[in-house]
Length: 114
Image (cartoon, rainbow, N blue to C red):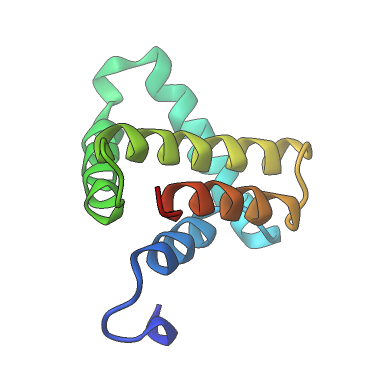
């Protein structure tokens, strides 16, 4: 994050945050497995839903960075992409090279001029 400077471009900030969360190496895959297990737990135990507030906060932060007509919907899609990439990385469907490329393609769509 420090290398982005004091006022990073929104696209660069989003890419840095999301790639930091993705399980792209052995250590982060261990963290990703724990997060996935917790998410599965909250699916069957609604009272364990503290994750919902964190998700809403992150979605709001993302929405504030997106230059689109409906930033809330775009932020929800970006969060879904982030989670999906994480699951595909953990399951072996995507490689650590393919997932960031997919993220970049989506960010290019969000930040392209209309």
